[in-house]
Amino acid sequence: MENYDEVEILLVEDNSADAELALRALKRKNLLNRVHWVEDGAAALDFIFRSGQYASRTGAQPKLVLLDLKLPKVDGIEVLRRLKADIATRTIPIVMLTSSAEERDIIKSYSLGVNSYIVKPVDFDKFTQTVSEVGFYWMLLNKQPV
Image 1 (tube, one colour):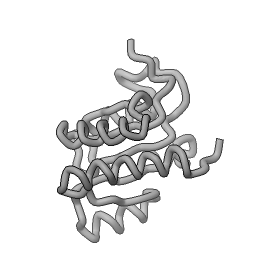
Image 2 (image 1 turned 180 degrees about the vertical axis):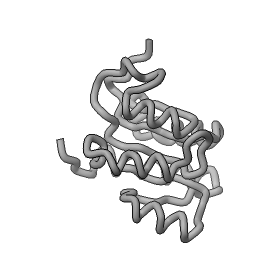
Image 3 (image 1 turned 90 degrees about the horizontal axis):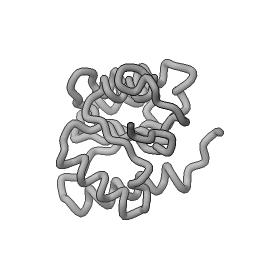
Image 4 (image 1 turned 180 degrees about the horizontal axis):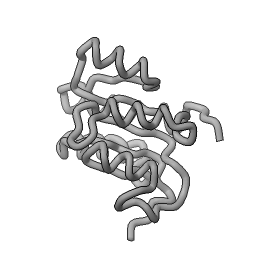
């Protein structure tokens, strides 16, 4: 069984190429060993709420969720809605990291409490730089409640 006690970043991304780029970028900031990647919104909810395949998960909640908008099973908006609606998970910072630049998606995300909305750069170098800066900011610079 995998050890989830040290997970600090939950990466929710269905595109394996984007996930690999994000993981590579986080590795540059020495954050890779604390990342858990899931490929759909249902798995993200199971991880956070310790249900399904993660029912026996122990340890703290992640300190950051990097969340794609367009996901299979449960979309990013619904994941965001459920995490921000629950008092136990409301303070977990959620960064929407998505290809959607549609104003309605941005407005909906902020109305539900997203902490940041970032449109994925198409360029490989810009994408990895963006993810590494996001990880660095939220994990090392931002002060969160204990």
